Length: 363
Ligand SMILES: [Zn+2]
Image (cartoon, rainbow, N blue to C red; front, top):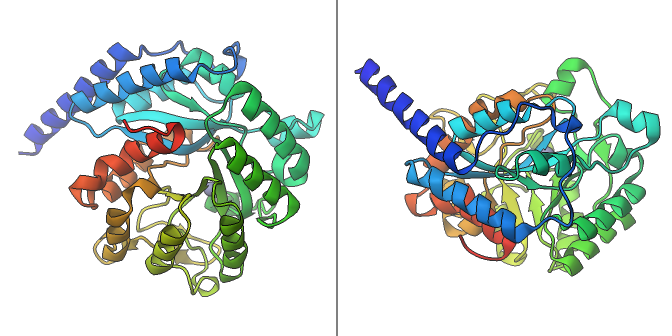
């Protein structure tokens, strides 16, 4: 029985691999950071036709395609061919990929912008959606105003379809906690002048942006203030249901998120979070609150909320420069989550909602 299942799964996997590869050949084995840049402005119409074919091919192989709306990469470390293989083997249709500027690079020349998305698009235009430079330490957190100015200039000139992720409030990540790194404890008020400028730009340009914003009661009023001041700004609040300190977040839960969604028409959430066993060590709490810990299934209130508003929830993996090999593991958690939703919304959440948000059309 077990052998039969293994043979079947191997067949499904190889099948998806070959069909997806026929549409999108594997790129050369190169580090993205060393590759020449694609021309800009990006020709989104031509890219969309490649992306659409890839989605169709994965779907035809019997696998639910996934668009990952929120991941970042270290251009110097990432091997494009190895990563493409991981994507094909796991039905990851597209990754919206944002380049990171490392600490060393920033300290050397105070770099505020990375063209690595252009390099990535030149080597593998079939698998990536270009995203502006990740709003993380140190370029964004040390110099938010100038970082945003650089981002806005390039987003318009080069025609990026998505901005971010901008860290406005970020605790140390589990990996950084392990390494004893505390510099990522970030606070930039959302309603500060730089936040206002970002919301204003998003509202006038129509380009969506992503925020990392830890869940704390005190942070919710400024968020609602900005959402009501800028109803046309399309905001993706990353990491649905990720609460690292329950005592600081008494108001947040499926009812509160439902109220936000029903009040603010341009608020979206991404689904990048750990599995039910994922422990946030600094607080000692299981921070992915969407899971029922006793059964490992999605809590019914969260599933009901998503079933009622599926276009507002976006699949995401949150890969980063220090965890590029986590794709198979992370997409398993994501597929488990999507699999617990009603079947009529699974495709929407997996890739259709992302397509509609980015390109204002249905796929
Ligand atoms: Zn984040």
